[in-house]
Length: 326
Image 1 (spheres, helix red, strand yellow):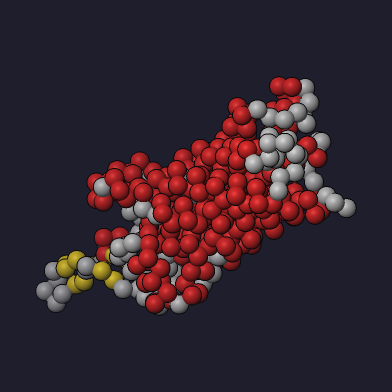
Image 2 (cartoon, rainbow, N blue to C red):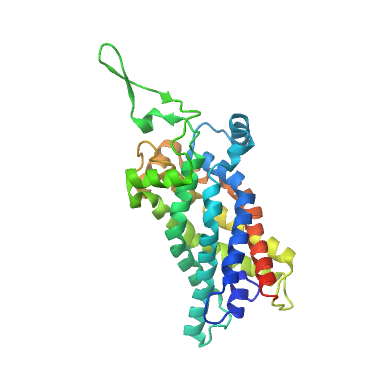
């Protein structure tokens, strides 16, 4: 296990978090956001938006209507908050491993077994929702602003001179913005929905992240160990890059169904709330669009998961190695 990012941290720190963990987490996380955000925007549009026939059609539509900048909508907030988020994720994961090792083996530096790693990963996924849910919510609300607002979501009607109500088929809101930026988005949500509004979709995020982090850290550790059969404590950069990329693809593809539900719930409620909860979102999506809806964006997740996670782990490990060389 010594080749995993978390374990390399745990063997070099004893009883406290080090500042270099936070710095390396920020650098790695920021790099992964820049690499993965364009495809993340495509993924969100496919999962929560309407009118796209395929991933390629979605990419072309965004580019034609919004140019290249359309792929980077909503990036400022996750980029700014990624320092805290990744520091919390990796810091909590590392400390949890040390606590488990200390409790089970009497030494916090003892390498964790697979069961220990699984438990630490699940707890990390559980805790990460506390910060990750608001970050994802704001990101998705900003990413979805250019979408056509459907009348079934708004429950609008046009009044005729006779007084009869005629349902509108759709309302095109192109060019208009509900939010001027991430800060305005947060304040608007707090004013209209309160603090619970920032955690809309958190239940679906738990379903995604608890198993998702297990399928993130464990494959990374296994692949790194397989690529370092001689027992070296430090993996080759290529091994880290490959292991991180494979772990990201595996984690994101398997998490796609829960990710679809999360994206829909978080995109919902900009003007009118459509879903009452996670179960209602699942049932409604299945009844209206079939089982295939839960795999919408899976190909994007597989593609973006590799470079995003490969960049995250490689940058994190190299940054940590650089800081600890002094």
